Image 1 (cartoon, one colour):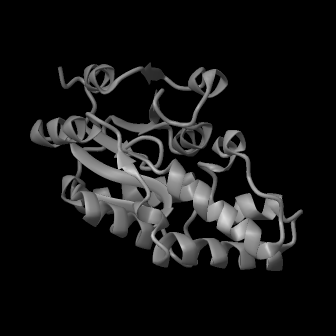
Image 2 (tube, rainbow, N blue to C red; image 1 turned 135 degrees about the horizontal axis):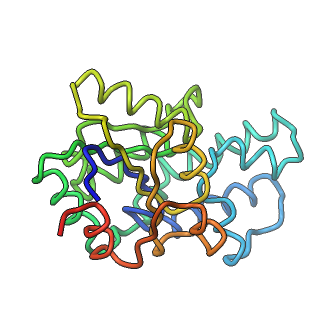
Length: 218
């Protein structure tokens, strides 16, 4: 396949951030007097915007959800949670190859800008992207569809070739957000998705080598 522009999810696609997310959720739950999160229940909370997750946990109570989000973000941003992460082996090399072949590359993540900057600067990969398509810190841009819309608008300002765009992610939220913009999706199996989510994608990559081939890089 020949794609002209690649949009990249972050958590579960480029970085394994589950440890930091898990610890930050349990810090939040402890502070709010909620039961601790079991490790096997973590993946259901990875992918959606943070406020949506806390609204569900807090039974739709917006004030409590906002309080939980603030506690979580303090632990994640100031408390070191963002750096409790590792880059998945081989993925940055695929992005580098995409960039070297002249494709446009943009992040398209529901992670807030501050968290993206912390982990991106630490692992030195933000220079690989023409656009940092992230959620805003204040939550005014949070869903995957909103993030994709922002990334596409910024890429258009750069005269990027948007004739064939693909989003690389790992969850159903990536599929749903991309579909709102008529974009193809490749889901990777090393993230937090499952068989039912992979079935909704246009293609699935078992390994970074598979992903490179699907992107037409090898």
